[in-house]
Image 1: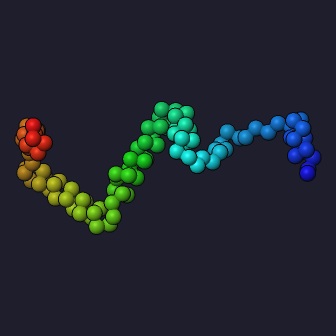
Image 2 (image 1 turned 90 degrees about the vertical axis):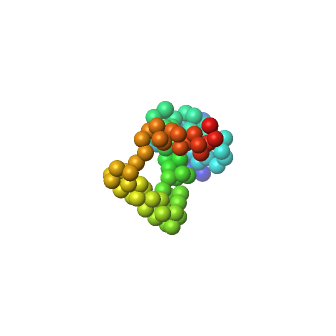
Image 3 (image 1 turned 60 degrees about the horizontal axis):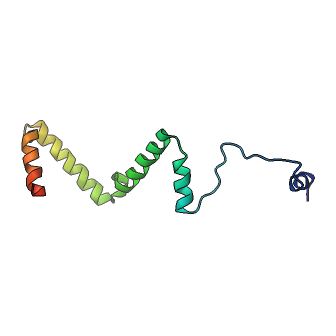
Length: 100
């Protein structure tokens, strides 16, 4: 055993981890606990990243992504050509879809 290890073992040398060191976490409760300690802005940024991974374009396969982008391009062209719905028309359509 080296001198410094011996000194640590006897309690004569105290080592504090640097602030940038993050201990490994392997369970959901450990991760949730660490998230709860984050500042609100960092929690919000993490949430946005996770939602983007789960529901964003990255979550789609190439075929789905291509179809979605083509659909959005078509919708944009229709709006530019004046073939859009007014807000009231859209509300009526949504009510019809949801049965309300």
